Image (spheres, rainbow, N blue to C red):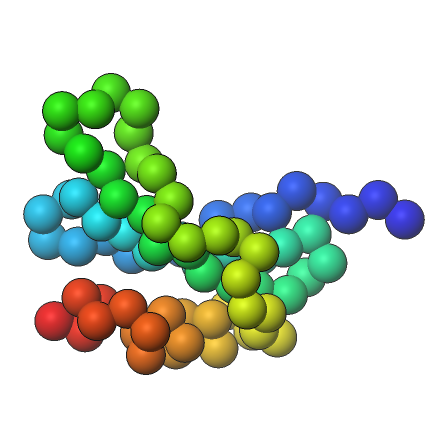
Length: 76
């Protein structure tokens, strides 16, 4: 059985456009989240601050709820 690549199903960006949290559906159908940042002076684009192989959640909503709990700027 071949697993699909992880897929970003939602991206939550802060007001400055410098941080975001991706909600990711993994190939085996569970979900996780990863915090990212973008530095305006760096042409690389987004860089992950947390691994996409983090905690596993059964639903997209559960991953989103955990991200809100764990990443303070999401509720500001």
